[in-house]
Image 1 (tube, helix red, strand yellow):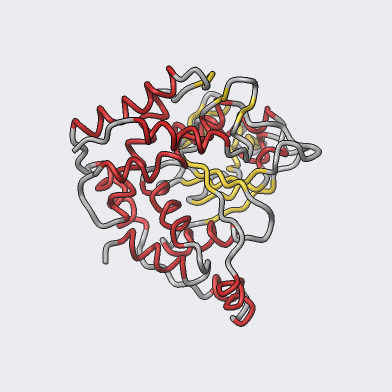
Image 2 (cartoon, rainbow, N blue to C red; image 1 turned 120 degrees about the horizontal axis):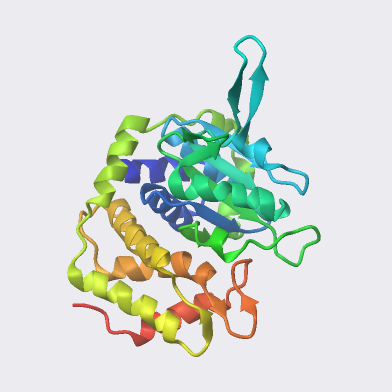
Length: 309
């Protein structure tokens, strides 16, 4: 069993009945992406984030986003030191390996935009200095439905920084019965032992980038992106960043499946989580906030394109 599979099995011990979302989350992590979760409270979003952090022996921080949250509350602030006559940078909660940005769309656009550089470049620029974030660095963000009071819709530029969007959903009856009979989820998480250390995880991330991708697979990804841009039903198609995310996610899914090469089914498996939240459907309906119209659009496009042999 390789490291990605060990992480998946470890997280599954506390998040029951969610094997595919767990595998997809680990793939997103290995692909050095970030994860957006659309769901109701209480289905295990915090459990997923904390269990993943525990499994790799990393630091974890939960940030509750609210309308009065400031960028400095997330990134940190420079404070004048009268002894040295200099400003000392006091790092914010973003300087951890795994970040849970809870209800991210309750924060103002100004605070949301503070995460753009962090998520894309892995660094924080402040007062003419650049501060590197730890490696690995993984943001799991949750958001409320956009029709809820006090929410600020995530702009396309912010959504495009998330490699995947997932939905955990309710457990089925048999799984919920197990949840009720087991010891508290909090106790199980605190007792969760790591199955890898940060050095081995960083090596695994580097190894994932080397997962072989045939030219035919690259052409398949290009064809998918082109189809979204040319569709008469789609106003905003897949960006080049989205195409790169689709490729990286396919490589990571292959690694989670125990392979060192990508097959077309890997691309198809990750296509909806990677693409759907990036598309704007004509008529003004944007699917970055829990809508599922674009999910079906992605599946339709996949069904129309020839799959490389």
